[in-house]
Structure formats: C-alpha cells, structure tokens
Image 1 (spheres, rainbow, N blue to C red):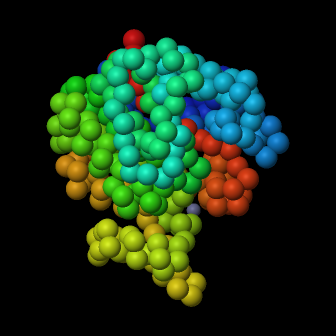
Image 2: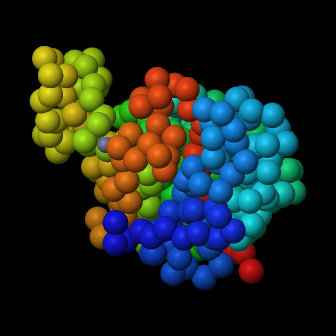
Length: 268
Ligand SMILES: [Zn+2]
C-alpha cells in the first residue's frame, strides 16, 4: 500500500493516494468506518441516507469534508444503480447542499473548481480520476456490472471531452473487495470472460466458482481508455478482509453502511 497512506484528523481516518496529493488544489479521500457518529450495525462513519436519519449522515459528511478539505456545501451525489452511465456536472451544482442528486448515474466528472464529486461503495470499486493539466476530476462507482460495462473508461471519455489527454490522467482505485474474496459463479465469470478474455485470469475456487480480480479488471479498462499503467494506483485494501475498517456488503450479507470516495479540484 505504499502508493496510499492513512491519515487521521480529529478521529476521522481517511485513505489517500500520494499521487493525487501531489496535484495543486486537489482534495480527495476514501472514507473508512472511523470518525463518524453512526450507530448500531452501521457503527462508525456511514454515508447512506437510506439507512439513517439525515442529521447523522450530514454530520458524517461534515466531519469527512472538514478532515479532508472538501466542500461540504458543494458535494454532488448520485443515486447509483450499477449502470455504466457517467454525467458531466458544471458550476450550477455549486452550493446545492447535497439535495440535488442525479438518478441512474454511477460516475461523475467535472472541470468546475470547488465541486466535490462523491461515489458510494461497500465492496464495489471506487475509482477517482484527476488531470493535473486541466484540473478535471472524476469519481466512479464500479461494481462488477459497471466494471464489465467499462464505466471507468466512460469517465475517461467524458474527461477527454472536457479537454483532458488520457496519457496525463491519474487514477486511484480505492478500498473494495479484493481478488482474495470476490468469488463468483459461472454467469458472472462468463461476463468477465467476454469483456476481458485472457487478460483477466480467474482463480478457480469451490465447485464451479472462481475468484476474480476487480482491481486488475478496472486497470485494464483504464489502460484501454488510454491511461499509462504507471498512472494507475491501487490501494490493495480488501473491504471484506478488513471489515473492521470498512463496510463490506458481502461480509455482512447487506447489513452494512456506505463508504464514500470524494474528489474536488481547484480548492484553495
Ligand atoms: Zn479479501
């Protein structure tokens, strides 16, 4: 995990990518369970408005933003539905206070300064994107469907439309279910095989199941979209193995909170 590190501020523990830290005015972070006010089975720092009262989740957002220099009043949230759909958001999203949310959207990009793009995960793969040249940023939620659908590549295309060159982009693949624990049956294996072929080898496990590496799969998507391999950084933190630090959908059979990954460019 040398490309990432943990930072604690006022009890809020955040995982960060060193390469993204190196970009002037850029703020980002991958949340952990530590530092929030959620209770019960959500205990820690959950960001799910579906599972807890608004004041609690708002307080978690406030703490996370304060610890990481992110714009609490200008966060952009989505209702994620495992699509490969990415939206470009502009200045008009500033100061909307988390009340405007995009539907059927699993990825966001922008070149507007001071907007905080957010994606929610709990085993699914969060990918943050940044262009050191234009200042454009992106946040992507890639579950297995979004990974096969190439959502990280769709986000890169939207950033190119904003003037970015793919060879300049940096990508950070955050905490998510690892190749140690993401076990799937024949139908999902077939979907990955159709998309990636021999570039993504499976590890056979019990019966007709196999372990699949979502981190490598997203790396392949990003490389196909034009990113340089050494511009792609993986936290290599498995949410299932490290369920004390992260919410894991599979470990808890769905009784879990939500993590976020967030990024904003042009911050002072
Ligand atoms: Zn694991």
